[in-house]
Amino acid sequence: MKIALITVATLLCGQAFAQDASTSTTKIANPAATSSAPAAEASITTKAPATESPWHLTLGSENYNYEGDNRKSESGPIISYNFVGARYAPSKLWELELRQQFQITSSRNGLGGRDAILHRNSSTAMAETVLRAALKPTGWLGSSAALLDLRYYAPTDQVAQENKELGRLRFDTYLEWTITPKFTMAGYVSPRVLFNSQNNPNKAVGSDAEYYQVKAAPYFIYTMNDHIMPYYAYTVSERSSQAQRGNWEPDMANMGSHEVGLNMYYGAFYINPALISDTSLENGSGSILSGDSRAFSYDNLSYNLNVYAVF
Image 1 (cartoon, rainbow, N blue to C red):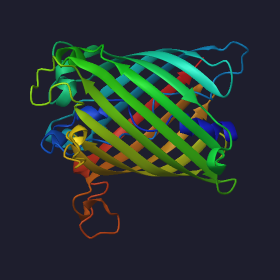
Image 2: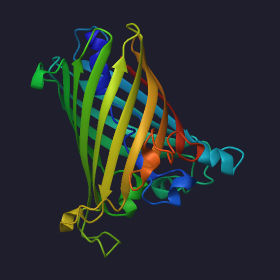
Image 3: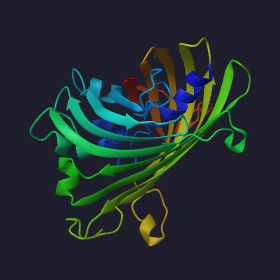
Image 4: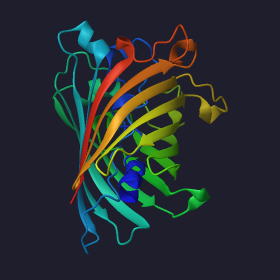
């Protein structure tokens, strides 16, 4: 049971960069509305097969579609963000991993943000190369499971090269506490930064970091059995383009995202369907209890299906 729960930690926190790119045409109309992404994220760590070898093959596919896009046209684009990785895990305490990511879209119509550039010439495109290091301390802050996850996204995709970027750095901290044999509560914090070079074509930004982003979320997990665990999460996502100049105002994203989903474990596979509703924190639309609530409204709802495996 504990293995299944700790896997939630290592699969946490949002699709790497895909939804941050704001594929939805609905979201492009509002630059502050960038998705906070689902709880599952590309890091199958502790659900590895029982084997003496420290080397593992990791696979992942994160797929999502926006209801707002579906209502604007016959069918909005489905984005599939995938990776193939090699993991070295000599112990249960730490591991290293190298991943190559690639992205597929069902349609190039209606794409926005980085997705529009990435798929300018093809529905399939190579994405970033990721270097990852993870530490899983035991009993940290009284937790029943913990994960410290550091990643560097190398600027290997077309968008990063055109923008003369120097890559992105991300550091995830996840802790969970077992309240009862059935209920688990977890906390998650993820600061992220994108770096530019002096050759950045946006001269107003120059070599400063293009943005700083912080995501934070409480998670509530219910264990039905060893294979199925429904959950609810509320993720706050703040992104600032001026933080490097001392102004931390979230001028690029000020979001609160409701998420309901299932964690399902079958052998080497982890499957995570989820519904996510992105709402603005600048008004009362994000509160479930508010009369002005827009939580789980069609115009801010996304459908997500994530599948991961480790061999």
